[in-house]
Length: 142
Image 1 (tube, rainbow, N blue to C red):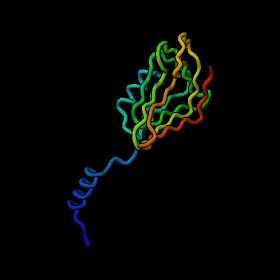
Image 2: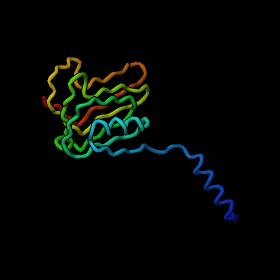
Image 3: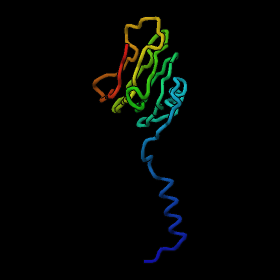
Image 4: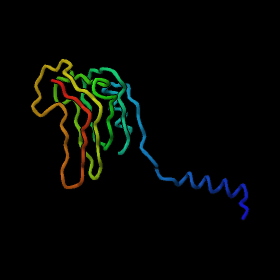
């Protein structure tokens, strides 16, 4: 069976127009809290935000409300210094039937003077709708 060139082009165009989103997007941040928050706001569930190697002092909080992966370059590779003076450094609000992950980040004191008894990274979710959170290869120092 011989397929004409016009038919082949038509099939390829339709195949591309109706293709589902096939994979997560990886966003590369500059390591600042503002940039991570902006990338999170643009991300979709399943996407990844990477943090580069280096030490970054965050004086403003980040709120994660999507099922994303926040991935640093490993303990000692990516260091976030907590300089937020009121409330948590980062808040995770988990998404129903989705998995979230935080990996490869070292957290250190960056000059916080106030005590926060609910923790610097609260993880909020409920158990009955399959919200999950994985925290691995992270270090919490002071």
